[in-house]
Length: 178
Image (cartoon, rainbow, N blue to C red; front, side, top):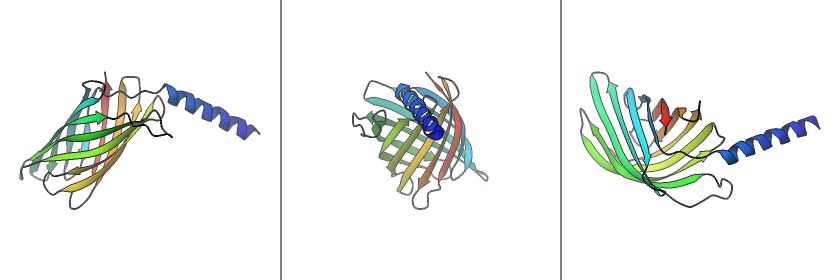
């Protein structure tokens, strides 16, 4: 009986925290990336209006003596599509440009779909699937978590599993929401 009461209280606490959570698209962040090389990254996201978000990302990756600049700029279209079991989640479509410069220069486009979900007021999950034409064409499935230390600061971590000869990517960083 005590376990049932404890589980009920815990479930109610998680549900109430979940119902108060909200997605914030405006942020800047920086951290460490490990892909086909490793190095720092910076990223930014800005909500242009209720339906569109501008996203930009820059990484300076080093692999031995070679350095690569990896940039992407894109638009996310925030759909009104809601999943029945996660009504607070935000689904979106992605479209943008990728550029890699260094020993090999390549520019391409990417497109995909994604989902962001506020698990609690302190934890937000995301997942996205995309296809990229930069370099060797490849598919990517990424997922990550943001843990909010305060309403404005978060620790972010993500992993992208890529197809073909493209290296998987790991990121760890901090972000400031505004």
